[in-house]
Structures are given as structure tokens and as C-alpha cells.
Image 1 (tube, rainbow, N blue to C red):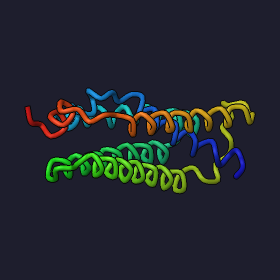
Image 2: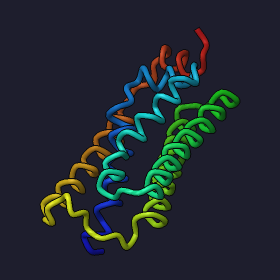
Image 3: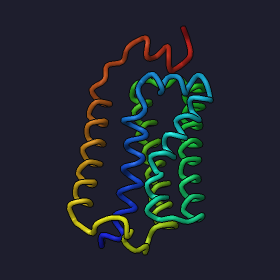
Length: 168
């Protein structure tokens, strides 16, 4: 895969990983389950981290596509939250739900890349260097690995269950 093809895909992945992992503390994870305004806030954070693509690849179609990606992110999270409310997920089911949730997010990102960025030329605003791509790829892998590692190492605490289900 040539650099022109990889850059937008890596930027989509990077934006998702930063918005969904680094910019979403546990408190926001719990609040978005209780109040829809926090879910909307999370969607705006996702859109903000995808914004560099709109700068590098200007155009109305890119803006619409990135808005659709953020909207799909909200929809996926809303469905997951709805399922969590209806079902009493145990630890194993929660992990499976998280894997499915992230898989759907990555499918949406891949679809966005395929529809809007495949075949685009390298942005003139960026130096054409493999260091940029390699650094971005390594950073995405590290962020996913760290978050996945911490997710599987977390202990189930009673207050986490109460916050997630809304029971006090």
C-alpha cells in the first residue's frame, strides 16, 4: 500500500483511538450512559479528532463523510448502551460487547476511507516522508495495545457496576 493510501487511513485510526481511548476517561464513560448530552459530547470529541483530515483534504464531501463517521460512532455507542441497559452483562459479555463495539467502529472507519480517501494524492501541506507514516502507525499500535492491556487487567468493582447500570 503506497503512502498516499495509508495516510488518511492512519489519520482516521489515530483520531478514533485518541477520541475513544485517551479523551474518554472512565467518568465520561459512565456519564454518557446516564445522560445523552455526554454521549453527544463524546461524538463531538470524535469529530474534533477527525478534523485534521478536513484540513488536509478540503472539500464538502470530506466534511460530510467525517460527520457521518462521528454520527455512526454515536449510533454504535448508543446501541451498546441500550443493550447494556436491557441486559445484565457479566464481565465476559462486557468484554465481548467492547470487542464488537470497536470492531464496528473500525469497520465504519474502513468504509469512510474506502468511500472518501482511497486514491487521494498526498496533501501538499505535509512533507512526504516515511517517518511521519511510520511514527503515526507505531503510535496507533501503542495506544491500542496499552488500552487493550489495561482493559483486560481492570478489576470489576462494585461502584463501576452501579455507575454502568444506573443503580445506586
